[in-house]
Image (tube, rainbow over all chains, first blue to last red; front, side, top):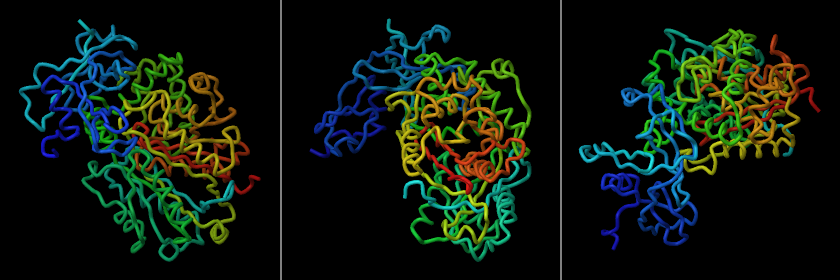
Length: 135
Length: 393
């Protein structure tokens, strides 16, 4: 049994992203859904988890426009990043694309965007997910 | 233990803050140590100091770790037990807490605590990258969120929920630059206009260049003793009467809200209860204004005003010298500067000056009770200390 289960790790979360899936891990004992996944439930200390698919839609809680970026991101600046609350209440940060920066508003609906270039990147060069307005 | 001295500060030192070209961190720390030794002629550093705790955030700046032993050596303190603490921008606040543990445990009668950072020889993108290491890598740094970006996320939330304005943020910068103009050791000693802040270039909207603290070199230190041996060294000790420290999620996105720092509220509660004082008893405070929004949130988390009213408190002028609760009389991280590892004990240095009547042109009249609020990263660490001068009842 132990050899079969996916490890509940951050690496595995991003491997799911690469497959176009937004997954969290649910504690089988207390029911808490974790994002990011963790090896130990911080509520009940159980190590017994299962992967659950998370809702792909949510609303923007807060955002900023990064104008001075670290050197790895300089070519993308200015870019918007925000924190999105998914429909089940889980919060997740990410870049916002597909909308003019000046049209971004707190409270706007957003949906996950798995990007197109991710499959060309090899581990440990992680894939990256984004957010965009729903179609 | 309520309201009783935990430890006593018998001396303190601060290097110049600014762009200290051609100096290594250890050399800057020695400058702060020298001031602390000179202020306290009854202290025999080699004989009396039993432990040294030093806050230092980054090895990347000088390709140099192992800061405890290094600065002990350069301060003439070999072979003292020397330990570095790291809690991002709260590194020396955490060092102070550790030093208090050392004294309260009974293991040490006299300890030195301080912090140092040498930053200005690095380029801004390099410093941006190093500072971001204090935030979550896989979900924040990996998605291009910078350190100013995290506080910008808090600012946007504060503006959207409470109606806080960019102008209110800017008043914090104007005030702290005014205070810095009165501090001969501050990095920036010039007053600035509100318009200068508002028209400065955007770093991470809504935060502009003048909403951000400075990249600075500097060091700070304190000499702490058991309260009952303080009189051997000085007749003007400052007692630490409350100490609080707490942690929170490394990623801000996991928190309940983005308008308050839970760790700071918990640290403040612990410190206030230990000291048996209330927010309205505080005469002067040094808070962690790494960004202007952080000072506004600090007012609220420390109970200087209600949640959501921090912007209006900043605008009222009550946190300026002469106001009801002067905050960041040193100029704060904003104008005095923010050599990250040095900041926690540099805040304590300012409170030491204020409570011993040595703050010169920025002296708060009759200041008896002081507070420091030191935040690590985007709030995953917070350390609050409360101080009482000897004249206070």
